[in-house]
Length: 250
Ligand code: PGA
Image (tube, rainbow, N blue to C red):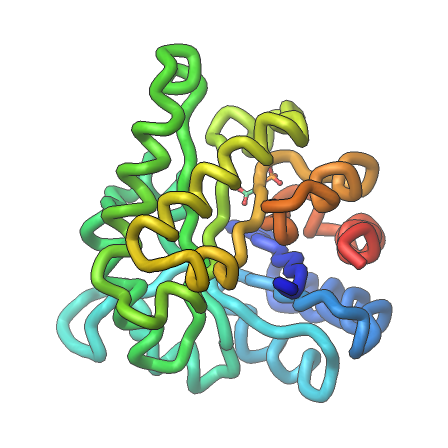
């Protein structure tokens, strides 16, 4: 049985003061032993203060991006060990906003995924098609390209990757994929993983859905056989809505 996961992607929101308040609100309402892995991913500046708030709680910490190198002349970048040092267990890689606006490619995402495991971080790797690609009937081709190339050469670690299927047309738009649409792509992704490794790996890998997940649609999405939880943007910015989504995954 795969354990469900609900991860909050705060994007470029929350000052340190606001982040600490939100993290405390989430941690105060999420009990241990609920059978759901809960992760929050604040901006870099708030990671350490939020880690202090989460210490001893049932909520884990993740970052939203990182560089693949251990250190060096990469102005403005953050290294994997720096994230570990401040208490991160996860890192989001290849989010569609990074792919569309900041030049992330399958190749750089793949380098980062390998570096994440090397540093003891679990990568949450995002894949998904745009509206134009979906309407052109290219959803499977795009998702295959993202999965096969972003997750290449991970060896046994492939089973431990968290894949987030996020159709770009559903992110921040209020247009959620229907549970059937999402399930179809999730099953396709799991099949790709089986082809890259084996059935056992495919059965183990967790695939989250992301894109306008809200308290009122989460349960229906999370009840589908290949949907193992969610990556939540807008609805993760308030403790009550995020915790309601966590509860929908139980
Ligand atoms: P959303 O964002 O929930 O606001 O649609 C999801 C994401 O981009 O991870």
